[in-house]
Length: 290
Picture 1 (cartoon, rainbow, N blue to C red):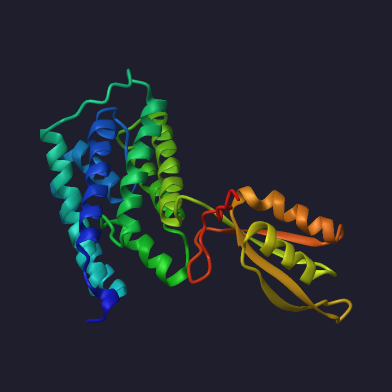
Picture 2 (picture 1 turned 45 degrees about the vertical axis):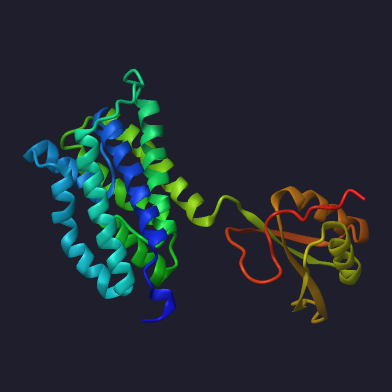
């Protein structure tokens, strides 16, 4: 088995921690305030209401066929992590129901919706960050991310809406809308945690003076700069475009540098959720005092 397929104890610990956080929110916020949930967990709550089956048990039963599908697409390591995540979530749901921690929000459903999204988003985000899933629609979302490049948060939000519509069988519209709020917060936190605790910016500058601008960026911001070969579609003239990755706080400085050398410079700013590889660090380089 190749190195990237080896199981990591740190991964398993963090997956367990994420499941614990998610399960606490489900029991102490969602169930306690009569809110639904998205995905397979939401289905288990529907089953809990109509058939009185413990979600800790139904979570495992529903996930068996989905885990089999997940193995076909995601491989052995993903299968182990998914099985582990499913069992961990089931355990923590069981645990928090028997060692209940009350969260008193005075029956405020708006706060409940926000908290449910925070608990679920942080918990699931940690699980995804370390290569795991909690089974269910997580498997579907991870397959789409791998095969189609669709962010997991977006897929989970879409699937959650479907499950929430089914939840109207035991919820009223008001409760469902607050649950939808929780699902939105959940999806945003998942994407935030997966992308890292930052959002860098990629800057493309097209100017008549690329060398001067690049030199100033290197000297003033201590950032690496690359040249991209380009050609004007109208003029058919070749040119050098500047590309560099900076922190959001440096955008104003880099725009000022470009405008100083060329007021007519074309500047395009791109979102970069992750920057890896030699020669880049997200943190702004620290200048020496002397």
